Length: 514
Image (cartoon, rainbow, N blue to C red; front, top):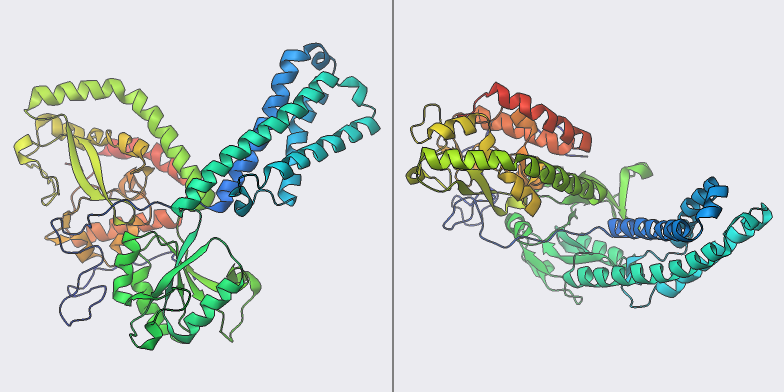
């Protein structure tokens, strides 16, 4: 089961996430307050995947050990290197690689071990010593040991000992900080209570998984099944309150404990929960229906069926974050002369500031401030975009019309990418009061907020396909949302690069940009 190929529909006028009092309930993302459609709350920290931490440590140790061997060789044994350059190069690459593999088998990259002050340093030094000895024995048997410098080998071994201690000390400090912040654990919510939830909690705890934190249970039933367990796990609220809770707290996974036979109830829940940037899994612990083993995912030895997967996790998240920052930094440096020209033109054309800030929906419906070059008359500024710009809008300045048509007004958003509030590519961050016709976007499209499962982007799949600019009809925002969800479901770095390369051509066409 997956979230591919979503069909977006216009939301019925009385559609809502949940109500318990008979009146029209609040829609998802529509709490009461000064800013409709947006909660005023702090940014929620993301999880740091243990696999990513282990991967970075492996790479860091391997690279540092190779660099130490290379630097010592270049400074002290230049003549010997000239006699056998390929042999030196092979050993400098192979020995650290062999160490990392041996360390992996020795289980010294485990997060639990790294949390201990001296948990892995002695064992890592022992693995490095063993790897070094094995390589020396191999070189002796191949009759290559006489070719190598003893000074280089001795200095590399000693330098490696020091390097391993330093790298692992830094890793310990970082892991301790992240563990203290709770960012190395997965926060899990159980959807559905009763006996099935009790059995699932016990099974997960029996698996001995150290990175799992079961926060609580959401269930519409309020009888004794909602009482606090001895281990502190309790009912946190009803199904109608779950989305709000997940928006305001860091939730990584939802485990649905309802039986597979309750298909209608599960589907009703999924229609509300799939908009969240979390993994959603259906417990198969007590199911008599059995599938092939590849169908299941596991927490310890507890089986689950994946319903929706959180987009951009683990190494995908790292890859996109790094590529975003690198591309944004390069583009910002290249665009600085253009920034100066546009700033002067704006100041000469009309009174008011050069830049304009607007509150918009970001990742997980968080409030972010997006920077733009000012394109409207200062006295007509509309920070909440309660009235979208249309063709021949008299609020737009002369310079503003040009920079809006060419989307140059969006260039300051490169700063938001460097800050981490936006991506280079993603669904556009619509303003909090943006409307299709006379309705807020969330009131027009069921599942509209699923766009916010990833960070918003400066450009996107919808924009290069012509769905940009004015949204005066329901169809325009429906189609834009469909393209955004397609991008989220099919993300890859190559897809991002393709969209970025297509963007200038889309801007030159100037479709629907006023």
